[in-house]
Image 1 (cartoon, one colour):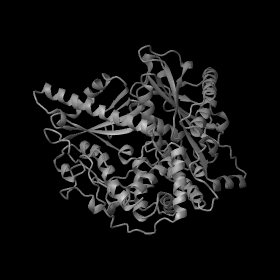
Image 2: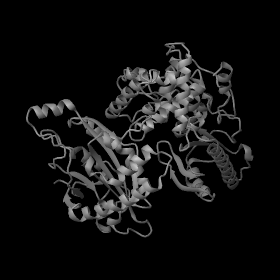
Image 3: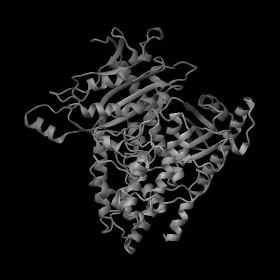
Length: 613
């Protein structure tokens, strides 16, 4: 790309006050390691990278992109109409064009979205509309619109959003109240001075999404090269099962910051070279050091003082608050975007980066290809032993409860890897499986719908040195020996009047259900049941008659066949639905239901016992 073309890219940014030129901000704390540009051979390799990315669906086609843009335009009209209606009930006259604004951010705003990417939106509303009105009334307004489905308001989340589906896209709609009577179309929310007048820290947190997006674009020397690099990294991370902030891997923001650092260090390189440097740099990176793309002194509060009760990452205290991986957002308040990362997740990431580095080093010699690099991880072939988390719930409650359980899985990973179990890796699969009908549990409440199952899996890898030591000393290395038990919160199985309280509220004399399953146990060490018990007692069940969760350890051969088929069909044929394979999948699910029903009646799955037993 010529310098003129690269300069033109700095006019593409949408959402923060029209299309305005993005001025490059040099990171003075990260001087470039090389100013070398690409050779002819490098550009040929770059063409192969671009071709592979398109073949694997990393780019959205024109028709799909037009539908996405039309959806955004419609949502903004809906929100403007709603804001005017709310103001009218308060006898406030508001111009339609200045009533509110809907700002995209994240992958769509960065220009690295694919056909299945969700859309992150922020609705900027005037101060006359309060937060409770937004989250209580907007869902009803959205429900009136044809084509909008699956509406869910998450007002109490750390970053509150309303989730819904529209035109085939998953939408996350947040909100921020600006301290002004109207929202002009050219309002630039990236400016720090707007933070001075905002009182609610929730608003500053929500505002950080678009601000981080904008700052990332300002911090890279060549936007187009950065975008291609980030597309490649996101595709690689997704296909290698290491892309999911909620369960303890880097999410889109973290991978974007890591990519931006590489773009800063090698400003003249083409995307194929940047991708090679990405894996080389982080293979040798000292992960006790924070990854930063903006100097901390440039990310301070506008008035030089931290706002009340709003914590910002402090580099002087990094040693005391260190996490396994620290990737810092480049705006105030600075935050660790990889706070959820566990030591086990970092081990998985390191292994994958090492593999990718070896493959990219052999690209130029023809020893490997980009298809090898982006080859999907075969999760259920990588490990022989798995923790299976089974979430059950009525049709009405299963989605919300399984989402909550998914957000807690990283805590179980930490408990397992910080104990003395000899576990080197506990790798959560980034996909869930289901829901499927839980027919063996009966019909359920007619109002709440039938019971359904959703499964999550953690792959287990043990410390090879420990295993060798055990074998050498003549000790058993049977990791599924049934010498211990795991707790199963099967509250909904109790009669309606006999359901126990949520785990966090259980008094000492209360009962819970206990299921006996084969569990990981190094004979002379602590069994897994203690960690599982701690985890389950931390799960808050709002309605014990509608949701439950159980955990057991299974070998690969005992995995449900439909789960493996669903996983491999998604991995190998993303975007393709093969009719005969889909039929096999449905048949496998039906067989699984029969097996589950038989198990439920034969193994004494639920037993009521005293808590102190």
